[in-house]
Length: 303
Image (cartoon, rainbow, N blue to C red):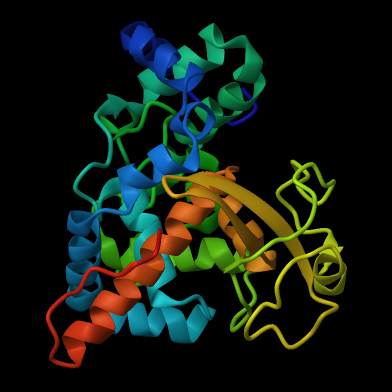
């Protein structure tokens, strides 16, 4: 009654909704919680995904250039988000969104309130966009399209980037590119600011610098005093930063991450996810630069 939906129409939709045990199993064991960086990296930083990222960036070069100019978000970051989320649109999810959200809303108590809200949002979204809610498909968490927006994010951040009157991130890569850029701007991406840098660290392994919060809270000057090597290109020691420890194949790695790294975690609240996006973006950027300069695509040494 709050949103003037027809009761019988809603009952008809929910009568067909199915509880999916596979969804409950998937959300209970996300890769971000069960893997260390060494295993997580192997999923996303692969030659095929880098090559596809180059191809995607090349195919929609004009759109990426316009998005970067209008929003200030680097093209390779936008491409990497879409690459991590759906392999550039190749895998946008096969669950009916209404099944996914119903399952999580009513059979997953830890986040029931959140998913009940998203269930409401998908009906509002379908009405606004003229979609059939029965036909929407996405991930096990109800995320949709090239950039995997949950329904509330779709309503708040999707943009009509090609000017055809519809904000379609489900099937339109142009709208998807603009929408990912808009998402980052709305979460306060700072154009031209650093994201993350690998460093040497000579301090204590149990230092309080390795705090769990994703948001940077120390100054670079504090990190330097605690044994962090100087960060190249960071000209202001008062800049807020975070010291990050990752367990890689070659052993422990230390990274200094900044505000823009935190912005990436607003897409997925995981340091591993943000690092995968960052490293994939740099690989795509290198591949694109090499190929545009007449060189073959080369494997780089980011580990």
